[in-house]
Image (cartoon, rainbow, N blue to C red):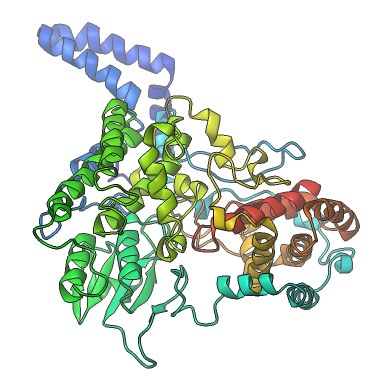
Length: 598
């Protein structure tokens, strides 16, 4: 199928449609058992062929992706005694199509007009598989149909909200009266992100304590959306060791094209890649090995040889691969729940071996760097796709304490993503995730279809907990406002893409970099986002909700079109790329507030 042209001839489409119907299926089975099998006259073959048909019908949507993913799960050996799948979980680079994609209809209490695009857990029939294989992704789907002839060029009341300059001054006035808020905003928006103790998702250089003018010996090429777990473990190691490095952002194959500059040093396009003292290294474990070899005394992450911790080091790294394999197999095939639970129990027990909270005791090590990306993704994906709460489950108390300890580290605080980002960045990278169990119980909560993205927000979060240090909702709200104020020009144009024409298709529907802006709606989005920013700056949520209703009524902006653009923006707020989780849920909730008012 992957070798066929993108558009199938009408006759072929009709044939596939017939095969997919119940009549077509009945016809195939009749021919198979009445003509083919009697001619072959082999009972064993008949039995096996019947089983084969059942399997194909049941697992057609996962067959290509699962076989490819599991077959490519190879290990390489080195200093770490373990390795990673060469195809990579989060970047099966060069894959020609995503097997599954679907549209969620967002069910809001105050509005049914949503055009938000989400990902599927499985394609329900052969036609959907063909469409998703050849139809492209977010760049060509999800556009709201709007009749622009009935939309005025400018809002009826452009002064329904203060100007961007006035909003910026309003924030400055608030900060002037609150020293603790000023300190908070300065910490979250550092003048020198290259030297800030917390990891910075958008920084292109990290110098830490190096002298002025220092030229880093390491350049890390990682994905621009912060989706890739293999990039994450290298990133986390560099932050923990505080080794100066540069960052060059490249898109993953599921949401963009690699630049020629990157392909010149990495023809396969795979990430991460590091250039260390002029040498190009392309596997995450090889990069980690070289960093530890060159900088062994700078915050060493491997225990001393001969210690009990060193003896456990190799065993724990192998446990990480076994835990990953059990989770990944269950995630993409729907089989292997018992194996995963056993591995999770073993991991929980391993954390107690040296007293915790980290794997080797009270000091973070390389073992934690290796586990972190996948434990983070397990916590997000298991409730959403399997109905199993992983983090916060009393069964795995040591894993819960590990998360709490990691979230106190400046390195992990700036790297950690949220559940919503992960559950939607996994399917386009691995070829689809299979839902099972009581998953529907948590899907709407993580997708923001319940009160999780609606004012008033629960302080501690819902199925996804808010970090204790981030639970000051007032501060999170003001920082979300600052992020919007600082980048409003780009954000307004980005939101207009909801009505723009699609560009080149990509496999990740929530990441469509080639979609075009729609200039005709920009003046209306600009006003709507000024209303959002002003609502964020209100003293409390009650005032914000009252203001939103009044401002929207007086604005005179096209309701359906503007609401579609705000929803499009809301669903594409990424963590940690754009902001952290506590701030992202504030922005998403206030975008919902204005969208619902419309």
